[in-house]
Length: 355
Length: 275
Ligand SMILES: Nc1ncnc2c1ncn2[C@@H]1O[C@H](COP(=O)(O)OP(=O)(O)OP(=O)(O)O)[C@@H](O)[C@H]1O
Ligand SMILES: [Mg+2]
Image (cartoon, each protein chain N blue to C red):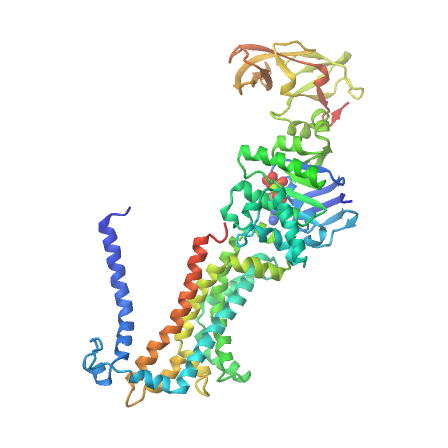
């Protein structure tokens, strides 16, 4: 069992609260991805779990053992740093074996573990090289190898792929997914990349400003975001938001006077101000749907198979809609955007999801 | 590419400076191989078969006390280098890595130590050494020299330690290293070039120093070579053969140490220790 349980974790640097009442459970063997804007405390959370950073209050258990006061080495974690942090003065073999040597592991056992990791990560021909003689991707694999040989309960990855180029990143992402399957390891993983988060995660944790905004399965966050922040953060390009008012008879009036008819959740009362959210990929240009918005096309970004139309509504707001194929519409023309009622998200004045 | 004219000018200046710096040394070495008469007769002439003589070297190595003065110098210099590097690096590590209450104050205190010449405190140092019963010992010299060299070495080593990425130390912590192990197995190997630099500039003034040996270990067989040579400089007659030979041989140990350290220095620079 290597479940990670975090309860009411608080951490501040001087007067600045960086983590506020974090509650989080990482199930045994699951892959949890932490996402959030820069500076929201993802690295700090990871480092607190690793024991590299003292916390102010709260409780952390790893595999049922309370680890609050244990040094990093005794927490049975392995951390993979963004900068890889390989020891520059040691060859690949010793980089991986270093921690084991200090743990007084028998020589034969060290050899076996390092060779096993090297085999898994295809590092066998590189064992005698120094880190500076390796490419970025190879260094990354050594860093992962160094984590594997320690047989930790939990792997902690802090943006491990952000220094790689796009092609290599996709490759390594797949490798990490395979590795997770094979080792059945518990993994906590910080990333800025939406695709990494959606594809790798069993559970995504969205953080903002030192708090957990929502934690759940990737599609759950995508289809049922708890609040405006999560709705805007998950998905790319971001969800469109429009303010609206609930009118008599369950219609929604936009600020420019357009009215949308929808089946509203019971918690909506007449006169409430709400925010409507709908994703670019759920809108079509000129198609049919329950709802329609009309505006002027500002610009169309064409990516080939699909593209994004930036459409300005009469109220002045811009919304983005995905377009398929090669639409005839060009800048300056008026366009009708349609979407279906089931893809509409409604948030109350506090930004909480309704319904 | 630089313009040839300015390249020639730069090289010219450097060659001139080198010649100027080497001239006295060459003069000393040259004359150490000549007979007394020839030293005074034609000091600038190279030794010829008729003027060649090893009498100075005979005297120096025939005198067993001179050999032990060499050993004293080597011990004092070696000990000073060792302790300066060890304590300098440890203090630098502590001052850069750990946040504690008096951190800034301590750093400032050490910076002041760089600016105040230790010789100003000679009288107090003598008193202290006498109290400690360390007069005429090499321990006294090593202690004083280490104190003299620590501030600047801490200053330089701190700069280098601060450049070691934080992740590296934390990777060490995750690997289960104690703070001492992190220092010895990760930090020290990475600042080797800086330590070589510190070693070189610690070594030369210590080896050449006459002041503290004269004050703290003037007798009792614990003289250093620079002091030991003074026995050949008499009030009425000076044994120039012996003095020049002793001076010439005194160059060798520092030269060897310098070669060792500078090799480290260059290896460290070319291997790109940290990145
Ligand atoms: N040593 C420190 N001293 C003071 N404040 C710090 C320190 N380290 C981090 N912080 C602050 O803590 C907050 C969270 O930092 P953290 O590194 O956890 O962000 P992050 O979510 O990992 O961001 P990024 O995505 O950019 O890596 C930031 O506001 C940062 O300024
Ligand atoms: Mg970070």
